[in-house]
Length: 96
Image (cartoon, rainbow, N blue to C red; front, side, top):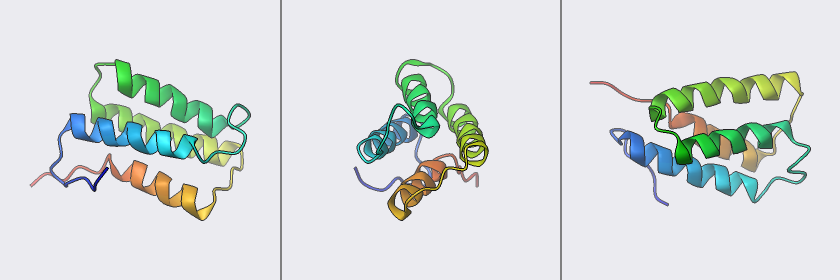
C-alpha cells in the first residue's frame, strides 16, 4: 500500500490504518499477553465495522495507545516504533 496524500479522505485513512495494524500484528511476539495488541485489535474492529468518523476513531486510538505504552512500560523495537509513528500520522489532517 502506497503513501497517503495529505488531503486523503476518511475512507483512505481508515483502510491505511487497518493495513498498518495488520502489519504490526504480524510482527508482535506475544500477541495475547501484550496490552498494546489488545488496544490495536479493538480499534481495528472499530475501523472495520463502525460508522463513526475516522478522524475521531484515530484520535481516540492515539490517546489509548499512549496510555497503554506509559502504564505498561512497553518498549517498542525500531520497526514497531516507525510503524506506530506512521499509524499515528494518519490522524494529522491539514486544513488549508
